[in-house]
Amino acid sequence: MIKTTLVGHACLLIQSKETTILTDPVWSDYQWEELQVLCPSIVLEKDKVPPIDVLNISHRHQDHFDIRTLAYLAQNERIITPDTIILAPKDKILLEVLEELEFKNVKVVTDFESIQVKDVTLMPTPSRNQLSTSEDDYPEHGLLVNDGEVTIWNEVDTIVSPEIIERILQQYGQIDLAHVRFVPLIEGNFSYHKQTELPLSEYCTFLNVVKTLAPKMVVAGAAFFRYRDEIGFLNQYSFPTTMEQFTRDLAAFCPEVPCSSFSHGDVAYVTPDGVRFEKQSSDFVRIREDDSHLVTFKPVLEVPAIKTKTTDPTEHAREMKVVEDFLENCLMERILNSELLGGWQHWQIVYQLEVFGQEGSQPWTIDFAEPDKPKLHKGDIGKINLYEGISSSELCALIESTTSWDYVTLCGNYRTFNNIYRVTDGRVELPPEDRSNYALEPLMDLFPWDNNMDREKYMKDVRRWKGKPAY
Image 1: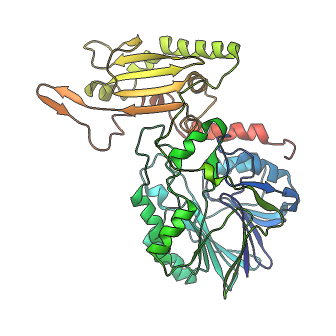
Image 2: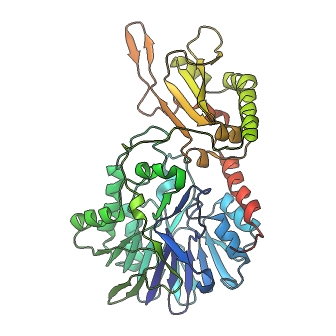
């Protein structure tokens, strides 16, 4: 028998007779640079979490790789024992963080590698995300757990193919319990003015994974969080389906596969005879409040204006000086030296950067169609076909290298859109359908979202939480 407890979001405690496995622990009150919280909210009694044999980390997205929780576990000699094995993907930044936090016994896993720990065999399953053209390119894996009698599979966020599913079936036959993806996350679409609707093509792949895998039982997993407090409005733009909707659609799509709800504090007992669920039966975690109604997809409701997060007048004055100094003394030099300058000029782009302070905003405009060298204009010139609106606090942080695009694009205080075209005599030219090479926002070009920015994002949290008293 294997016993599985959903702790929160993608964090599972998986227990066989002899082995305890903890996956993707995110126990902080706030996660993803303090933008999000677990939903439903939980009460977690950390002193009751049992010692673990394996800590499995699927990938380094912050809703799976929470530095504060990992810093806590690294100091907790009761939960993380000298014999605990840390399973991790071959990700340079992730592995560097684990080293900085002084984790021992770190094992870098490979796809479909068989790992024996006491009475269970663990097998990482691959993701096709590294084969995609996404900018967010990082290694990740799901996890198969087999105790000789039953097999469970945690898909996590992996993107799987029919070939991967076939390999899983060849390895273990019919899976007894599968934790599968159920919600396509479109959290960045609001900031980038992209479609805010259920991406049916991606959603159908989730349904097809279940139909092709045909497990004995399936539960929806790895997407139980929401935006908090003043950025709660993003909940209506970011989560285009619910667990209940997925369960209903799955029942119609493949009625032969049983599906159950599975929430924080619920326990599943997996045996050769089937799966038994006991709601809220965990002895260390339970739902504090079912606040899942706060995650309701309604991308037509009111949206607050962009505004600096800085409330102190003195600090606001400082950040505005940093911003204005950059715009007046540095921006155009870097724009004119950009590799994208020719593209901006070819498409006759009129670019506007609007900076929002404590009260109101100030637009700055560059007309790349000017016959001479483009210049920076303070104000509006009547046309915009590439726009970036950003709070002074976030722009100041980008200038001073104290933030990352991961935060800026999800905090609600950065928004962009484009209407790219080129007018010539009797003709209107449109860019290719893939406009990424033409509409790349100047701020993203000047402050590139690269591995250095990503690394510093994590190391900032390492410096913040390493060695701090347990919370």
